Length: 150
Image (cartoon, rainbow, N blue to C red; front, side):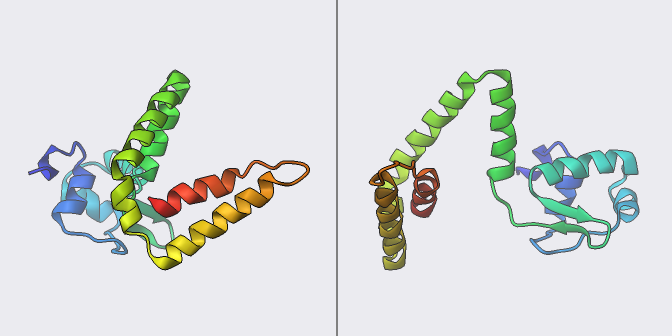
């Protein structure tokens, strides 16, 4: 089982109790008593869960489970890696290229007609930007193209 290998009582609690995105968790004091850790340690673990994108917390709404996405964890890890050594970005970029290549056929097969129309609009917009007397680089269009396909 994977859950017991998670090194956070709070995150393990979320999975063991079967919480889902949108579910509201108990207050910190109730969680502290139920999990059996101090409120201070719980706050630290809550911050880790927030950084990973597992929960949101606000004074009015409390602690709410969120839909999981890899983005927060990957973004933080990539930024830390780049802060240590800029060459780590090239390694990450290479990984991304290999993943896109490996999943290209599968991703393209899943595109709908609406997806294809949107991709055509992006390409047309990028071509327009590149054909201007004062060339504009279509950074956003390029990014959206990759996101739309994958």
